[in-house]
Amino acid sequence: MQTLEPAFSWKSDVTDRIDPRTPVLVGGGQFTQRTAREGRLHESLDPIGMLEEAARRALADAGIGDPRALDTVSVVRFTADSSETGRLPPRMYRNPPRSLSNRIGASPRRLFYTAAGGNTPQWLVNRTAEEIAKGECEAVLLAGAEDLSTMLRAIKQDVDLKWGEDTGDDPVDIGEARRGVNDIEKAHGLYFPTNIYPMFENAIRGAHGRSIADHQIALGRLFSRFSKVAAGNPYSWFPVARSAEEIATPGDNNRIVGFPYTKYMNAVIEVDMSASVVMMSVAKARALGIPEAKWVFLHGCGDAHDLWHVSDRVNFHSSPAIRAIGAKAFAMAGIGIADVSFIDLYSCFPSAVEIGAQELGIAEDDPRGLTVTGGLPYFGGAGNNYVMHSIVTTMERLRAKPGTYGLVTANGWYVTKHSIGLYSTAPTEGPWAREDPAANQRELDAMVHPEFAERPEGDGTVETYTVVTDRKGRRFGIVFGRLADGRRFLANTPDDDATLDWMTREEMLGRPGRVTAGDMTNVFRLG
Image (cartoon, rainbow, N blue to C red):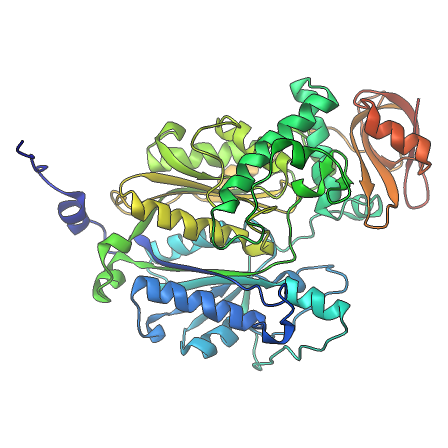
């Protein structure tokens, strides 16, 4: 049978007509270091060494032999340099992008170090794409790393790793650096994501009208599919496929962290992982001779945040910001969710996945799957840089199936800061441009939401809640509630075992009680 050739190929005819300033991703690399887990602590690369390894892999993937082609190096903020990280030693490296550039032999004219947040890698791609399209840069390296497995083991073993470097100058800090919580939220225990995301989850259960038992097994089924993807990923920190029952059922190795989440439902941040992406203009890619088969285009993107403080949210089971940027990104790309072949939804906890899927119109059991990596609890929660791994993996999938589309979402703080990207090897059409995120943000900031009572007194009902348990078994309860006049309040519950046991056995949503204002924290006693 004779095979008919197409009249034209977008790999030749169409790419010849691409605007030379169109941004394109041309290289990606990732690296997982297991030395500390294997008892070889002193063999571990330092954070800059981790960055170097991923960067060299990304440059090699693009076929770039001389790093001096780079005019910009941007590094995702280390968790240790993020605000209020407790016992981690902050700012060991004065200028991480400078240190990385020195290691790989680059001499960029621009050095950037981002703010904290899991949204950062996708936000950085979106921002960089716009800068390339405007002619502000031509060849950019984006990189991030987390060395927390080695770092925390060294602290526990009282080992001085002698890490650090002072380059004598500072990078330009970029991104939204506001604290994720206010003083009232922090006083009631809402600084840690492990305490806040379970509160979203209980609100989601209420929105679905499910019993505690039915919702728990639904969470197990959701994340079992993630673990199976992680099991087949050579970069995964925990390449183990787990059943829905294993994930959902509390046990000696799977304690409840924040009700209803077991340990297997929580992101694992104690990893040693790095990832890097190379972006440039089409003109630069052609000048460097990078094959078109390596090119991946950003077709649609968006960045926004929900009402900043969790206490001010419209509710605890949705994200107007994800819904808004999803609509913007798909409109920009000129496609719909049905056109996407590969999906990676941010997955620090089940509630992040559920909210993201809901707002983007994706079923939780979508046969395409909701992750390409395996997710933060199983692939590994590489701090602020997890999504860089999502992007690199998506690039690999798209190159293997040219012309298909991939979706990546990113989430910073507490379903607060959001970024989205739609990718394909198929070229974009016309000059690349995106809508100014500020216009969309004004509408989101103006959304009507419940008034918050800082010092509440009187009768109220539970809006959502959780019981937090630490590694030593100490517990405390947190409640968001509503007063009779509709104002929202935040309180802790009495810490007696009877109350806390009751809160994990029976439905508390909508249950009445009485709240009393305190000097530092409010107390809600269930009726």
